[in-house]
Image (cartoon, rainbow, N blue to C red; front, top):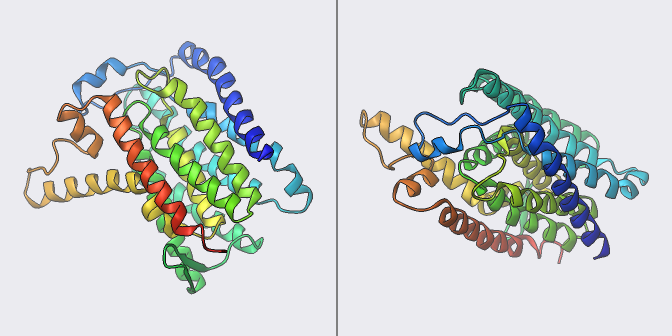
Length: 328
């Protein structure tokens, strides 16, 4: 318990300290967010708010995880390095995207094909490394019904790449209004931490707790009205880290419930685009992803944050009970 408390507060305090340093720095560098022209018109007031703020919690989570993971690394368990390294690679992909947006002063960064290729390479490389170092099997655990089955290695790689790339981009889509992605991700991190420690998995538990502390610290500055945005730097890191943890804990299928908000957001985009093409111009939602639909219906950003985060909390608790008895 003491380790959990120390890890949480180190990450939180490092995040707050980093925010106080980086936010003024980002303002001086004029690293401001460019707002989508086809987005809600009232978002234009956010133009110029510092972006790439993911650097703030990434640095805190990374430092905390490595420091608190030293005892495990001394015993020869380096999974903390593999997990954090994978998440940082995704953050770097996001940083390249953010940098292009800031440089061009428009909400267009890397091309979709470029991002997909980089994410796919990173996903496959991570799975390969984790498997060959003995930190990953090709078994698939099914939550709630508590069964496990094996699938062929190649099929598992395809499955893993699909889940990782899809989830990371779903998290990215959720980052559309002040504090939303951060708030939704806090219960996810908490559920992963609770699960890991329930199973006696201290390495992944420490990373999840560090993530929880970092996100709560960042939320202080990212909550409406946001003083800083996480950018693709932050959202891709969060998505990458969540995926790395669920695969390292050998329970990727839990993302169906644990990441419910991310997937509803993505599904709304798929439905909107598909229906628009099929009907040659008609729409299901006033705007996609779905958080913008509710905005157009008159929901405030505060209400959106509260409702979506509450949904995430409910499904995080459900997900925890769906896997907590795995080794019971």
